[in-house]
Length: 227
Image 1: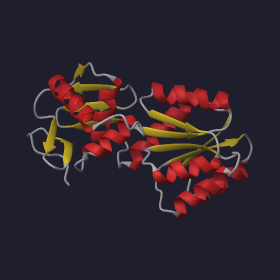
Image 2: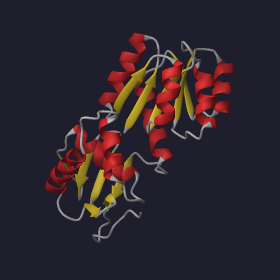
Image 3: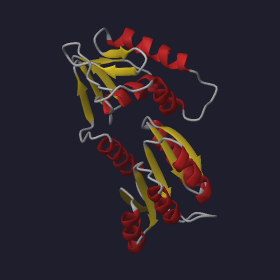
Image 4: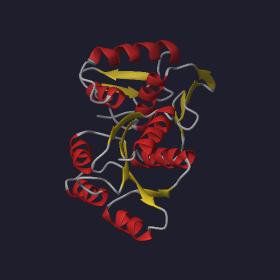
């Protein structure tokens, strides 16, 4: 899961970065509205955490521009305590949720995970596809109820497949969501992770549609995804 933090206060930005990374997100951070507008409009994120009080371009204007341009990424806005008018304006402008400052990181993570699940049409934190179970809150994977030790990178990949179980996911999309804008990474990195996961999860869990991408399989070994 790939997240963009838009926050100009260094301490809060650093705290958000640590908390989201610990929750399994690939995190990128920007500190002003103009950069945020460009990044959010040109990159593919699963979540954006947006402070409204930003230099160069305020967060509400950024949000309105994103929505006007067709950006549908879930946005969680951060507002000052008691600024109820900001919260109303933010929701009206297209925000999916809000948190007043100061806030508990545990609540922010819970809301962030819920937004990502809802965006994928998945309301439950526990995703089960065939023999595979992924717990997005506990960041665990299991086969037939037996826990499987996976790395954070492997968990991000299999979680993304679970949240997008109804379609074939191209390797280029997986590359972007696992590594962000790290251009040094190549598609063979995805192939290597898939190989390790198949070794750990066993047969009949991750399928390949040659020329299209990867998908999760149901219990009968049939493709769960569709192109």
